[in-house]
Image (cartoon, rainbow, N blue to C red; front, side, top):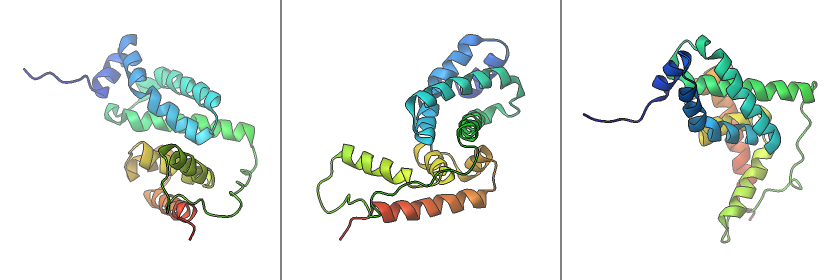
Length: 181
């Protein structure tokens, strides 16, 4: 007999039947990814922690409404997305404030030995220059590994919009992170 790790699908089905332990395993499995996604999106650790808790609470309450249990990750990230953007609307009901660029110059990351921490800071700084939609698309694709159609479902937009946001973000990131000659 071949043993396999319990899949999300099995845990979701058990949690739907009232197995709190199964839901706790889902939380353990997904909490770090959801928190990291929210932390990069809202750019505040405490808010990300609160939003993570709200996301899992809402997921627990609405688990019976999940139509396709195999799509649990996309559904969970859609809840996280909605929580974050609800907070954005509460804090900034009008338009998003423009992001100040680092002196209008590209951040030099090439041409010299760069430490991983410096690179991480340069990338984080570059991500700050993206719009909220572009940043979220990059995070879902690059950091979370979702496919275009899954991101479209999470963001409630067409796949073409997801691709457009991603490629525009990549162009901007390339310009910002290209070494200064």
